[in-house]
Length: 94
Image (tube, rainbow, N blue to C red):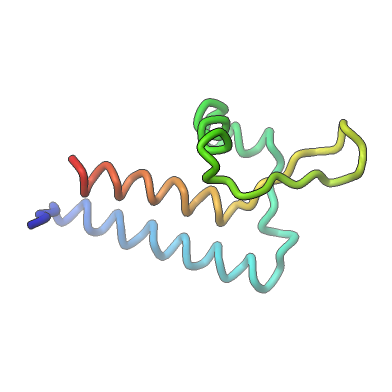
């Protein structure tokens, strides 16, 4: 049996709502879902992003252009989903 504090349940609900909104935005306006690698590092931390890429949790990395120096873009909804999954994992598998 899993027992959650009320604040943990509230936080999970809010994170799921945020993930739902991000997925909806991705479906309606796909270009607004993309964030640069620099922004992803700022929001989530460089080590986390690199670890998620290494683990294969981030499906595909896109570039904004065809050159090697083009911006690397990530899906905001995908990053939110991975972060929520890690938080749920830490709560459920304490």
